[in-house]
Length: 269
Image (cartoon, rainbow, N blue to C red):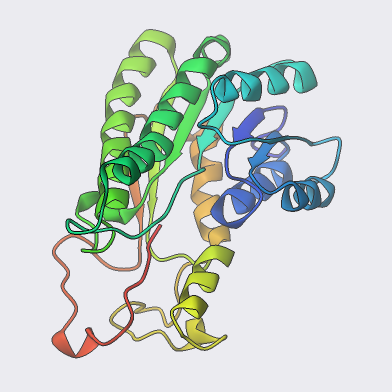
């Protein structure tokens, strides 16, 4: 029997990248998945790929008033219940102390921390019925971040505090587990596109310096999805309020040598 058999799971930002990989893994493990994204064409392609009987799709900006409630409603109307939420949708953008405006900082915090909170709140009643669980997808940048990822790093740090706070509160009060995955450098479609826009070759990911990728490559979305599947499954047991850093080297305190500084900065998470 598949370990997610019969579970109904919302995965936000699931028409590309890590979110899509998690959605695919959930369906493979027997779950029904509520897909979400901003690109209708990609959403419909993903729904067809994963199967109409296993998915439902909402295309909407989660910053819209009532969007969280509409996601939960879609799960209930389509599959009759809700067992888990994966808060993966996020905004990624550069900014530092000199060029980050008030509005752009607010927007980053809103999408990357407030919106996940609102979806958790909207889903809590249903999750409590099934002793469900929540995964927030963060980033190793949550611990400090690169100089030009200031607002993004701060937003992921805020999300990490939300995870630890609710991971205790909701488990004690409602039996709902809350955990977080902090990915390192992952080879998503958007990351590949960003690097090409930075002037790197089409196959740049095949020659990443060892200081950034000791394994000789960066992480694949499917590897993040493997961790998510375990956290979503009953076999995870009572684990709650925990942050799982999925990187190939100790992130905190690890400084690359000066001769690696010529490598274009990477956008993690």
